[in-house]
Image (tube, rainbow, N blue to C red; front, side, top):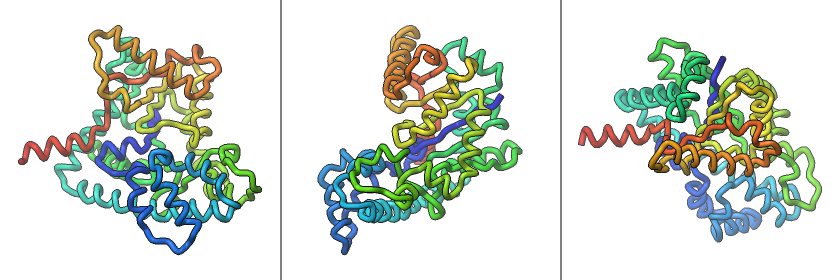
Length: 330
């Protein structure tokens, strides 16, 4: 039985990286542009950054204000190019920090403890189930990253080397910086446009279509990882509408086998407080119901008890460990 981790931008944020779209926009909108299309595009973002909290879905809506797919692709490619450079600089900043042996030691320790104990603290029943399937056994863990950055990869493989394990290849389902980072929505229906679109737009802004054209092998590997897992843990990942394909794949995986368990870390509940264990269980029930309703699950009762949302718990506290080290040496 294997455990699969799905890693999203929340991990990078927890490493102290400024990788939210709201971090990217201030510099982007100030960049000069000779194109009126890009000028108006940046103006729209600057006037209401909150509306652009999720670039991909907001871009899909903004596409409806454009005249044709050429203008849409111009906007997407201009932003993608800037974001690639911005995120690369953020990645290099943290990677440089990780070159310090003490920093890396703290980071690998935190990662190892997080991956070994991601399921602890729910109930004795869950503890017993997960221990029985060796869910915290690092050697059999697989990782799919939804990030463009490779900071997780760096810490993860250093951890494996320190445990005398071979490095593991992490699948980056949306590509990697300076190689093939891809920003886009999940399907054509999410584009609010009245003009016709061709394969150029599908290839330039629809994730599954791009992967099919560019690197279908990573799609197959991702599907296999999901199907072969007995336990999945998501961290820093909303699995929102722009990743609908993968959300549906996980829901199908849950429905197909009553032994499958999903652990869904939601940052909103990381610091939640409670007075009793029963109150904590009530809070988890409410969080579960909210999540499955948001995901439009038709028969939530069938999977409800196998979806776990940690209350008052967080993992991968990488930056917090660095801050602790800085306080100790101050």
